[in-house]
Image (cartoon, rainbow, N blue to C red; front, side):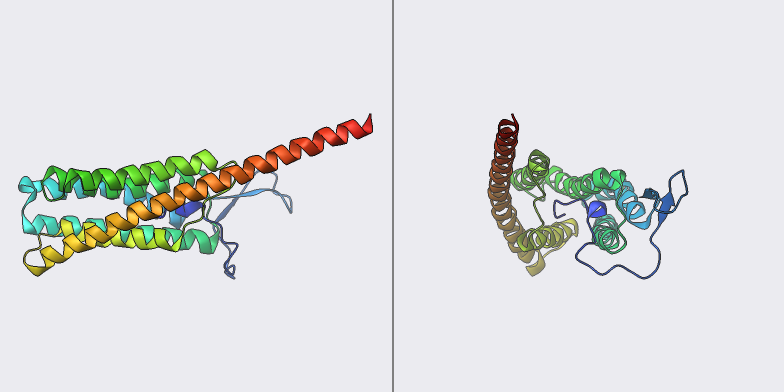
Length: 236
């Protein structure tokens, strides 16, 4: 969960594949006509699978009171599949330019839904303090809102720290979903501590980037308005 819609990612920095992407021609059919990506592409399908896994994960997690090791293992498997689809739909979207409006909206929703469901279930069952769930969800939802706030001025790119945060969150939550005991139960506490620190640190960095981006965008707008006023004045 990086914060940039995976199905909306651009493939500009990577070499284009030789075979033809999944495109659907618009009416007109003439050479050079506008084309759009089919909604039913592999990246979007993986995103939908991740969305469908959320209620299944919650049911498995809470079955038989939520503390049955076997059902917790099934819940962990569903959570892991969801995390893997997040990695693959992003890579496929970048490699094949599978950009759709659905993907732009659904991908971040799917990311937040599976992580939020896992954190909420763990807190309801008493396995994870509510303040940890609150910090992580506040950061994730806040950064998503922040991206939309500055989107007219540019896009905040996913950072290396953000990717490490996503990895740490996934590993930590996955370890808490499993019914671990002994040294592994202690280890998962430290992994979650690292995830929380990365969550807060990268969140503050995104706020800094958003402020810088917004200031630069507003400065460009003021310069453009000033240039337009000067141009009109010189023509009179």
